[in-house]
Length: 154
Image 1: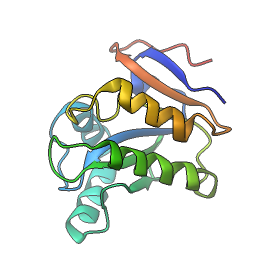
Image 2: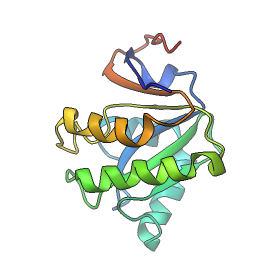
Image 3: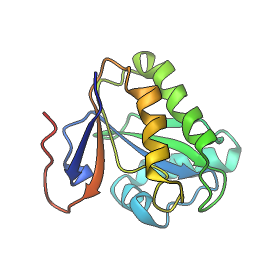
Image 4: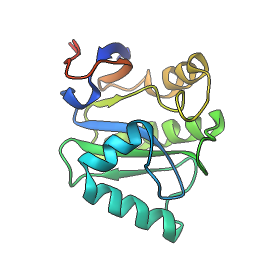
């Protein structure tokens, strides 16, 4: 199924699962991660626990299913401000390999790793297309954030 690129408010998505990039230090203090922390405090507490216990490692993910929508934390950076294409690729490969087993039926995300992660968006798009463009589920990428505006995801 082709990936859909939209403009709008990620948090108004109709997708079952929201994904975003994270560090492995247990901090969500800036960018879109701060909004995830504010909206999903239980998820943040568990994410932080996993970071401090060493369970959340670069290239992996943590899927929180106790929220609506589900939250998919992607370990794209070991520390603050240092995403790598290798980590991003490993995260998306893991999601692609496990989406069915995890029960993910649709996925929406912002420009992962291209803001505070400091990667070039065109490079990240190539990785997203490679791993998620072949999935039989809707994948929606919010390229431009517009607060309060629902994107046309159809």
